[in-house]
Length: 135
Image 1 (cartoon, helix red, strand yellow):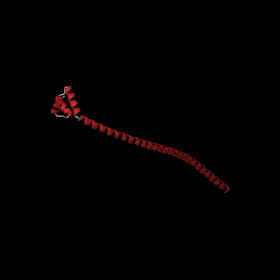
Image 2 (image 1 turned 120 degrees about the vertical axis):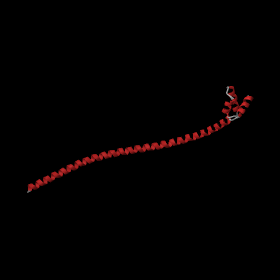
Image 3 (image 1 turned 90 degrees about the vertical axis):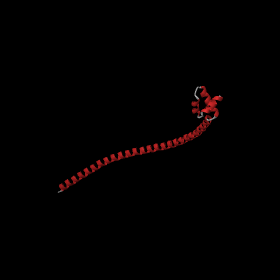
Image 4 (image 1 turned 180 degrees about the vertical axis):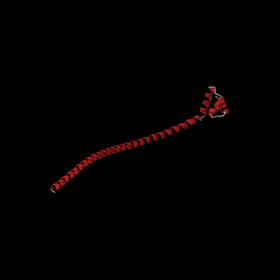
């Protein structure tokens, strides 16, 4: 009976030893898996920091570009005002009697017919004839 007990306890110890070895093997696998997860977590955190930095840079440059665009818009508005003023002056000048007279006389010297000159200047044929007659 003592040998039977001795065999029983020996088998129990061997079974416990196998369980402990199996436990340590699984523990090593879990540690390796945990190390991989930690490495990926660090990589993920680094990517988050990088993305946050990029976002901050984009916001900063966006604000800078917005202010530059506002400045360019102001400059364009100023130029529009100047060009409108110049166009108004040019329109007034092109409708002035002296300018129309000069166009008619130059056209007549170049050999253009009174009908063409009247159409070009927006005058009647009689007005063109009168200008050419005085010229």
